[in-house]
Image (cartoon, rainbow, N blue to C red; front, side):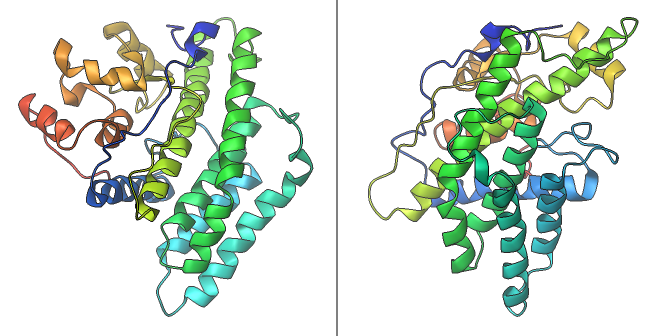
Length: 305
């Protein structure tokens, strides 16, 4: 039950690169709409494929994330008529986030816990997702100017988690010896959140640059492909007991993201694969492959929202 903890689980494989013969704009726009729907789902339901229901709590919600969630709520009320009100408020939330870490600009790995790295990186990712694909030219330009910061923070987040893995610091301190499953469950949520945030940050950058470019497809690559847990039911488990039962009953499908392409070949049904992974596959595989796999294995093609 510790497949996600050892240092080997943090090895970056081959470069994760968007296909050079990238999909048409409609596919990329569908991918973006799916990500934005996840933000709204978290706002409304407290859980989504990107942000786990147990990652932040009522008593422990970092200010970075409080402001980011407020920005999601604000975006839901934006119209062409009130853009002049919404845009400055959203920009103020983003500026406050960046100002809190202005002194870290020249530090290789800031003195933050992995959880703190994750909160600030997810917050910036939310602001960037809201801005890059906004109808406001000003907000798009502002978000694009912070892409490098997002990727730098993502790299620092990954390095922090990697260091914790090397020193066996990923299982939360204070976990009762009589209840090790709860500690493992919390560690799974943290580590899987790191992996998902890393992937979405890099793939979003690549998708945006391709949509913006009028020339040949832009092939964006990050430092390497990462492992993610691709088995359905683990991320969405309501608690530690359900998570444990799912783990004991099946293989977690802990694979590098690009190795997900092997799943149909070994008989894994699309419905048995986590929604997060399936959504990534829509831009990492060739057009229509995910839909064909879903239909052939008896599933239904559903929108990300």
